[in-house]
Length: 364
Image 1 (cartoon, rainbow, N blue to C red):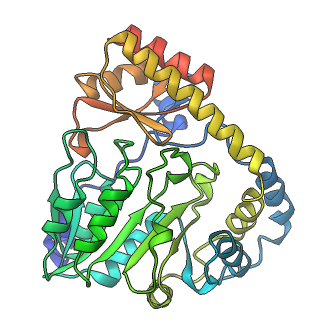
Image 2 (cartoon, one colour; image 1 turned 180 degrees about the vertical axis):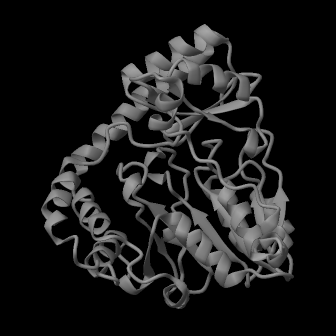
Protein backbone atom coordinates (compact mmCIF):
# COMPACT_ATOMS: atom_id res chain seq x y z
CA UNK A 1 0.00 0.00 0.00
CA UNK A 2 1.28 3.45 -0.92
CA UNK A 3 1.59 5.74 2.07
CA UNK A 4 -0.05 9.12 1.63
CA UNK A 5 3.04 10.81 3.08
CA UNK A 6 5.04 9.53 0.10
CA UNK A 7 2.90 11.65 -2.24
CA UNK A 8 3.54 15.04 -0.64
CA UNK A 9 6.53 17.30 -0.17
CA UNK A 10 8.98 15.90 2.41
CA UNK A 11 8.71 19.20 4.29
CA UNK A 12 4.96 18.62 4.68
CA UNK A 13 5.38 15.05 5.90
CA UNK A 14 7.85 16.28 8.53
CA UNK A 15 5.52 18.92 10.00
CA UNK A 16 4.47 18.60 13.63
CA UNK A 17 0.89 19.96 13.70
CA UNK A 18 0.12 23.14 15.59
CA UNK A 19 -1.01 22.49 19.16
CA UNK A 20 -3.53 25.07 20.39
CA UNK A 21 -4.26 25.79 24.03
CA UNK A 22 -6.11 22.93 25.71
CA UNK A 23 -9.91 23.50 25.67
CA UNK A 24 -11.64 23.78 29.04
CA UNK A 25 -14.14 21.09 28.05
CA UNK A 26 -11.35 18.63 27.26
CA UNK A 27 -9.58 19.15 30.58
CA UNK A 28 -12.76 18.83 32.62
CA UNK A 29 -13.75 15.69 30.70
CA UNK A 30 -10.35 14.08 31.22
CA UNK A 31 -10.02 14.88 34.92
CA UNK A 32 -13.68 14.82 35.92
CA UNK A 33 -13.49 18.33 37.34
CA UNK A 34 -15.44 21.56 36.91
CA UNK A 35 -14.80 25.29 37.18
CA UNK A 36 -11.50 25.28 35.32
CA UNK A 37 -9.64 28.43 34.33
CA UNK A 38 -8.09 28.88 30.89
CA UNK A 39 -5.22 31.35 30.61
CA UNK A 40 -3.60 29.75 27.58
CA UNK A 41 -4.75 31.37 24.34
CA UNK A 42 -4.51 35.14 24.85
CA UNK A 43 -8.28 35.57 24.75
CA UNK A 44 -10.19 38.54 26.13
CA UNK A 45 -11.29 37.48 29.65
CA UNK A 46 -14.27 39.86 29.43
CA UNK A 47 -15.60 38.13 26.33
CA UNK A 48 -17.12 39.93 23.34
CA UNK A 49 -18.72 43.34 23.36
CA UNK A 50 -22.42 43.26 24.36
CA UNK A 51 -23.04 45.12 21.11
CA UNK A 52 -21.44 42.28 19.17
CA UNK A 53 -23.54 39.70 21.00
CA UNK A 54 -26.73 41.63 20.24
CA UNK A 55 -25.77 41.92 16.57
CA UNK A 56 -25.25 38.15 16.42
CA UNK A 57 -28.69 37.53 17.92
CA UNK A 58 -30.32 39.77 15.34
CA UNK A 59 -28.52 37.97 12.51
CA UNK A 60 -29.43 34.42 13.56
CA UNK A 61 -32.69 34.18 11.54
CA UNK A 62 -30.68 34.75 8.34
CA UNK A 63 -28.24 31.87 8.80
CA UNK A 64 -29.74 30.08 5.80
CA UNK A 65 -28.21 32.83 3.62
CA UNK A 66 -24.61 32.85 2.46
CA UNK A 67 -22.59 35.76 3.86
CA UNK A 68 -21.50 38.74 1.81
CA UNK A 69 -18.52 37.20 0.03
CA UNK A 70 -16.97 40.64 -0.39
CA UNK A 71 -17.40 41.70 3.27
CA UNK A 72 -18.34 45.06 1.75
CA UNK A 73 -19.65 46.89 4.80
CA UNK A 74 -16.93 45.56 7.09
CA UNK A 75 -14.11 46.36 4.67
CA UNK A 76 -15.37 49.90 4.25
CA UNK A 77 -15.64 50.38 8.01
CA UNK A 78 -12.08 49.18 8.55
CA UNK A 79 -10.82 51.30 5.66
CA UNK A 80 -12.46 54.40 7.12
CA UNK A 81 -10.82 53.74 10.49
CA UNK A 82 -7.38 53.53 8.88
CA UNK A 83 -8.09 56.23 6.31
CA UNK A 84 -7.17 54.01 3.37
CA UNK A 85 -9.03 52.81 0.29
CA UNK A 86 -11.34 49.80 0.85
CA UNK A 87 -9.48 48.18 -2.04
CA UNK A 88 -6.47 47.92 0.27
CA UNK A 89 -8.36 45.84 2.87
CA UNK A 90 -8.44 42.05 2.65
CA UNK A 91 -10.67 40.10 5.03
CA UNK A 92 -9.66 36.66 6.25
CA UNK A 93 -10.90 33.72 8.28
CA UNK A 94 -8.67 34.93 11.09
CA UNK A 95 -5.25 36.38 10.37
CA UNK A 96 -3.86 32.83 10.16
CA UNK A 97 -5.73 32.30 6.90
CA UNK A 98 -4.03 35.39 5.50
CA UNK A 99 -0.62 34.17 6.66
CA UNK A 100 -1.19 30.90 4.84
CA UNK A 101 -2.42 32.64 1.70
CA UNK A 102 0.64 34.89 1.62
CA UNK A 103 2.87 31.84 1.81
CA UNK A 104 0.80 30.14 -0.90
CA UNK A 105 1.28 33.15 -3.15
CA UNK A 106 4.92 34.01 -2.60
CA UNK A 107 6.81 30.88 -1.52
CA UNK A 108 7.78 27.69 -3.32
CA UNK A 109 10.80 25.37 -3.32
CA UNK A 110 13.94 27.41 -3.95
CA UNK A 111 12.60 30.53 -2.22
CA UNK A 112 12.83 31.42 1.46
CA UNK A 113 11.19 33.25 4.34
CA UNK A 114 13.10 34.98 7.12
CA UNK A 115 11.68 34.15 10.55
CA UNK A 116 12.81 35.07 14.05
CA UNK A 117 13.47 32.38 16.64
CA UNK A 118 10.78 32.11 19.32
CA UNK A 119 8.12 33.75 17.15
CA UNK A 120 4.61 32.64 16.16
CA UNK A 121 4.98 29.02 15.07
CA UNK A 122 2.51 29.35 12.17
CA UNK A 123 5.17 31.28 10.23
CA UNK A 124 7.37 28.20 10.30
CA UNK A 125 4.58 25.68 9.64
CA UNK A 126 3.18 27.56 6.66
CA UNK A 127 6.65 27.95 5.17
CA UNK A 128 7.33 24.22 5.52
CA UNK A 129 4.01 23.38 3.85
CA UNK A 130 5.01 25.43 0.80
CA UNK A 131 8.31 23.65 0.33
CA UNK A 132 10.11 26.93 0.86
CA UNK A 133 13.05 27.35 3.20
CA UNK A 134 12.85 29.02 6.60
CA UNK A 135 15.87 31.14 7.53
CA UNK A 136 15.86 31.58 11.30
CA UNK A 137 17.39 34.59 13.02
CA UNK A 138 18.04 34.70 16.80
CA UNK A 139 16.33 37.29 18.97
CA UNK A 140 18.45 39.80 20.86
CA UNK A 141 19.56 39.02 24.41
CA UNK A 142 16.41 40.71 25.72
CA UNK A 143 14.17 38.64 23.41
CA UNK A 144 13.45 41.40 20.88
CA UNK A 145 13.43 40.95 17.10
CA UNK A 146 16.90 41.74 15.76
CA UNK A 147 15.74 43.62 12.68
CA UNK A 148 19.26 44.44 11.52
CA UNK A 149 20.14 40.73 11.55
CA UNK A 150 16.88 39.84 9.83
CA UNK A 151 17.62 42.31 7.04
CA UNK A 152 21.11 40.81 6.66
CA UNK A 153 19.59 37.33 6.44
CA UNK A 154 17.59 38.30 3.36
CA UNK A 155 18.99 37.38 -0.05
CA UNK A 156 17.83 37.33 -3.66
CA UNK A 157 15.62 34.31 -2.89
CA UNK A 158 13.81 35.86 0.08
CA UNK A 159 10.13 36.51 -0.59
CA UNK A 160 8.68 36.89 2.92
CA UNK A 161 9.92 38.37 6.19
CA UNK A 162 7.67 37.63 9.17
CA UNK A 163 7.60 40.18 11.98
CA UNK A 164 5.42 39.95 15.09
CA UNK A 165 4.98 43.22 16.95
CA UNK A 166 4.29 42.57 19.78
CA UNK A 167 5.84 39.16 19.35
CA UNK A 168 3.99 36.04 20.41
CA UNK A 169 5.09 34.42 22.73
CA UNK A 170 7.59 36.89 24.23
CA UNK A 171 5.34 39.99 24.34
CA UNK A 172 8.30 42.15 23.34
CA UNK A 173 8.28 44.87 20.67
CA UNK A 174 10.76 46.42 18.28
CA UNK A 175 10.72 50.20 18.18
CA UNK A 176 10.59 52.88 15.53
CA UNK A 177 14.35 53.46 14.95
CA UNK A 178 15.02 49.75 14.36
CA UNK A 179 11.95 49.45 12.13
CA UNK A 180 12.87 52.45 9.98
CA UNK A 181 16.42 51.21 9.64
CA UNK A 182 15.09 47.79 8.61
CA UNK A 183 12.92 49.30 5.88
CA UNK A 184 16.00 50.84 4.32
CA UNK A 185 17.87 47.52 4.27
CA UNK A 186 15.34 44.87 3.26
CA UNK A 187 15.43 43.77 -0.41
CA UNK A 188 12.84 45.20 -2.77
CA UNK A 189 11.34 41.79 -3.59
CA UNK A 190 10.83 40.73 0.04
CA UNK A 191 7.25 41.07 1.29
CA UNK A 192 7.29 42.36 4.87
CA UNK A 193 4.52 40.74 6.92
CA UNK A 194 3.90 42.89 10.00
CA UNK A 195 1.75 40.73 12.27
CA UNK A 196 0.22 43.19 14.75
CA UNK A 197 -2.41 41.02 16.42
CA UNK A 198 -1.78 42.63 19.82
CA UNK A 199 -1.05 46.21 18.80
CA UNK A 200 -4.05 47.66 20.68
CA UNK A 201 -2.41 46.72 23.99
CA UNK A 202 0.83 48.62 23.31
CA UNK A 203 1.37 51.93 25.11
CA UNK A 204 5.01 52.54 24.19
CA UNK A 205 5.32 55.86 22.27
CA UNK A 206 8.12 54.39 20.14
CA UNK A 207 5.90 51.60 18.80
CA UNK A 208 5.79 51.81 14.97
CA UNK A 209 2.29 51.35 13.53
CA UNK A 210 3.27 49.73 10.25
CA UNK A 211 0.21 51.05 8.40
CA UNK A 212 1.72 54.53 8.63
CA UNK A 213 4.64 53.28 6.50
CA UNK A 214 2.57 52.04 3.57
CA UNK A 215 3.78 54.35 0.82
CA UNK A 216 2.50 52.56 -2.27
CA UNK A 217 6.00 51.31 -3.04
CA UNK A 218 7.09 49.01 -0.24
CA UNK A 219 5.75 45.46 -0.09
CA UNK A 220 4.29 45.71 3.44
CA UNK A 221 1.33 43.63 4.58
CA UNK A 222 -0.07 44.61 7.99
CA UNK A 223 -2.10 41.93 9.74
CA UNK A 224 -4.70 42.66 12.41
CA UNK A 225 -7.26 40.47 14.16
CA UNK A 226 -10.55 40.66 16.03
CA UNK A 227 -9.67 37.60 18.13
CA UNK A 228 -7.78 39.41 20.88
CA UNK A 229 -8.93 42.75 22.29
CA UNK A 230 -12.33 42.44 20.57
CA UNK A 231 -12.97 39.04 22.15
CA UNK A 232 -14.23 37.35 18.98
CA UNK A 233 -11.73 34.49 18.67
CA UNK A 234 -14.50 31.95 18.12
CA UNK A 235 -15.69 33.73 14.97
CA UNK A 236 -12.28 33.87 13.24
CA UNK A 237 -12.08 37.30 11.63
CA UNK A 238 -8.85 39.03 10.68
CA UNK A 239 -7.73 41.45 8.01
CA UNK A 240 -4.76 42.72 6.07
CA UNK A 241 -3.88 46.22 4.92
CA UNK A 242 -1.69 46.10 1.83
CA UNK A 243 -1.10 47.47 -1.63
CA UNK A 244 -4.03 46.95 -3.99
CA UNK A 245 -2.06 44.55 -6.18
CA UNK A 246 -1.37 42.30 -3.17
CA UNK A 247 -5.04 42.38 -2.17
CA UNK A 248 -6.00 41.42 -5.72
CA UNK A 249 -3.73 38.39 -5.55
CA UNK A 250 -5.10 37.35 -2.16
CA UNK A 251 -8.64 37.53 -3.51
CA UNK A 252 -7.67 35.21 -6.37
CA UNK A 253 -6.65 32.39 -4.03
CA UNK A 254 -9.01 32.74 -1.05
CA UNK A 255 -12.10 30.63 -0.59
CA UNK A 256 -15.48 32.25 -1.35
CA UNK A 257 -17.46 33.30 1.73
CA UNK A 258 -14.35 33.07 3.91
CA UNK A 259 -15.78 35.40 6.59
CA UNK A 260 -19.04 34.26 8.15
CA UNK A 261 -22.13 36.43 8.34
CA UNK A 262 -22.04 36.30 12.15
CA UNK A 263 -18.40 37.31 12.12
CA UNK A 264 -19.10 40.29 9.91
CA UNK A 265 -22.01 41.69 11.92
CA UNK A 266 -20.26 41.06 15.26
CA UNK A 267 -17.13 42.92 14.19
CA UNK A 268 -19.08 45.83 12.71
CA UNK A 269 -20.94 46.26 16.00
CA UNK A 270 -17.95 45.58 18.25
CA UNK A 271 -15.79 48.18 16.53
CA UNK A 272 -18.15 50.86 17.82
CA UNK A 273 -17.95 49.77 21.47
CA UNK A 274 -15.19 51.97 22.79
CA UNK A 275 -16.23 51.32 26.38
CA UNK A 276 -15.62 47.59 26.00
CA UNK A 277 -12.13 48.28 24.64
CA UNK A 278 -11.44 50.69 27.51
CA UNK A 279 -12.51 48.13 30.13
CA UNK A 280 -10.44 45.42 28.47
CA UNK A 281 -7.31 47.58 28.54
CA UNK A 282 -7.95 48.47 32.17
CA UNK A 283 -8.40 44.83 33.23
CA UNK A 284 -5.29 43.85 31.29
CA UNK A 285 -3.14 46.60 32.83
CA UNK A 286 -4.24 45.75 36.38
CA UNK A 287 -3.81 42.04 35.78
CA UNK A 288 -0.36 42.46 34.27
CA UNK A 289 0.77 44.57 37.23
CA UNK A 290 -0.53 41.93 39.65
CA UNK A 291 1.15 39.02 37.86
CA UNK A 292 4.47 40.83 37.62
CA UNK A 293 4.34 41.61 41.33
CA UNK A 294 3.58 38.00 42.20
CA UNK A 295 6.30 36.62 39.95
CA UNK A 296 8.74 39.02 41.60
CA UNK A 297 7.63 37.80 45.02
CA UNK A 298 8.01 34.16 43.95
CA UNK A 299 11.44 34.75 42.40
CA UNK A 300 10.29 33.77 38.91
CA UNK A 301 11.93 35.68 36.03
CA UNK A 302 9.54 37.07 33.41
CA UNK A 303 9.71 39.21 30.30
CA UNK A 304 8.08 42.66 30.38
CA UNK A 305 5.14 42.35 28.00
CA UNK A 306 3.37 44.79 25.69
CA UNK A 307 0.49 42.39 25.03
CA UNK A 308 -2.20 40.54 27.01
CA UNK A 309 0.05 37.67 28.05
CA UNK A 310 3.32 37.22 29.88
CA UNK A 311 6.22 34.78 29.47
CA UNK A 312 7.56 33.44 32.76
CA UNK A 313 10.51 31.15 33.51
CA UNK A 314 9.40 28.30 35.81
CA UNK A 315 12.51 26.16 35.13
CA UNK A 316 10.54 23.16 33.77
CA UNK A 317 7.64 24.42 31.70
CA UNK A 318 6.09 21.06 30.82
CA UNK A 319 6.17 19.72 34.38
CA UNK A 320 4.61 22.87 35.84
CA UNK A 321 2.04 22.95 33.03
CA UNK A 322 0.97 19.37 33.78
CA UNK A 323 0.78 20.09 37.50
CA UNK A 324 -1.35 23.19 36.90
CA UNK A 325 -3.73 21.16 34.74
CA UNK A 326 -4.42 18.93 37.71
CA UNK A 327 -5.34 22.08 39.63
CA UNK A 328 -7.80 23.06 36.90
CA UNK A 329 -5.62 25.85 35.48
CA UNK A 330 -4.71 25.81 31.78
CA UNK A 331 -1.67 27.78 30.62
CA UNK A 332 0.65 27.25 27.64
CA UNK A 333 3.97 25.38 27.75
CA UNK A 334 6.55 26.84 25.41
CA UNK A 335 8.70 23.84 24.50
CA UNK A 336 7.33 23.97 20.96
CA UNK A 337 8.67 27.51 20.69
CA UNK A 338 12.16 26.54 21.82
CA UNK A 339 11.55 27.83 25.36
CA UNK A 340 11.22 24.67 27.49
CA UNK A 341 11.73 26.53 30.79
CA UNK A 342 8.85 28.89 30.16
CA UNK A 343 5.08 29.19 30.35
CA UNK A 344 3.05 31.74 28.43
CA UNK A 345 0.20 32.95 30.60
CA UNK A 346 -2.71 35.05 29.40
CA UNK A 347 -3.85 37.86 31.67
CA UNK A 348 -7.26 36.99 33.09
CA UNK A 349 -9.79 38.55 35.39
CA UNK A 350 -8.74 39.29 38.96
CA UNK A 351 -10.19 36.00 40.34
CA UNK A 352 -8.56 34.02 37.52
CA UNK A 353 -5.18 35.62 38.10
CA UNK A 354 -5.35 34.96 41.84
CA UNK A 355 -6.31 31.34 41.27
CA UNK A 356 -3.35 30.96 38.92
CA UNK A 357 -0.88 32.29 41.49
CA UNK A 358 -2.33 30.09 44.23
CA UNK A 359 -1.94 27.06 41.97
CA UNK A 360 1.64 27.99 41.02
CA UNK A 361 2.56 28.33 44.70
CA UNK A 362 1.15 24.85 45.33
CA UNK A 363 2.99 23.11 42.49
CA UNK A 364 6.43 24.75 42.63
